[in-house]
Image: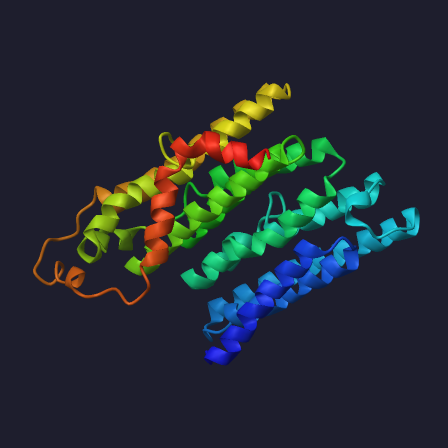
Length: 348
């Protein structure tokens, strides 16, 4: 892609998200979401491959449906209440409809079916953008509007954690596994949204860091399915030794970074008298842990035939920048001891 066009699209992507962040009016927020969607579509379709075109079409249809539903609910709220302010959504009907529209936008279960298929059709760089940056604007709106129906949020959160766990069990494609991982993590964030928005923000940031580290690792190894990870030790031996730690961090095992948000969310749910919800969410994390362990086994405990040809690739220099990978992988493993400081900053 032409660098000028690429720069324009990336700036538009940033503009759409920033516009949604800064808006307190539903029309401006909707415009930001639309700019965001329209900017990423050429990035998704830049490789003229049938799978990429199919993924782009599915993504456009899902996002257009969510945006139309959101605008319909915002207009209904203006008609019933006489105002467009995001933080003043007092009527339960438009509030619930907008929550469902934003759930479709970020891919929460049971509105998740587009996400694994779309992510599977994209390359790893665009997939990373879709799994991280594209979640920011809808989450900003959810945090700002404070959905009024607590049962709806708990249903969406629990459904997402369970579907994210079950859906990834029989997958062999890494991008589909990461899509189901994303659905499960988003479910954890939605569960605690109404009780402690700062915890949702913390979980979102740690999810971004861990997902970025995983995507960049797979990109460096040029791996798109589990079997291709068996060759990763010949390309980057040190990185292959760190892959299990990154994946177990995604699974939420101590003493890794991923344990921090899950631990804090379970504590908060228990304080709110939702022990059964916290137990179900924790059990669903075991399902996700199983498919992370499958990838770990393939990457670190399986060795391909040890031939001279097979052991030469590690001598070549990597083509991509490795500084972002180094930073995100360290953060994905080592932030747990900083939990008290991070919580103190979030509660300021």
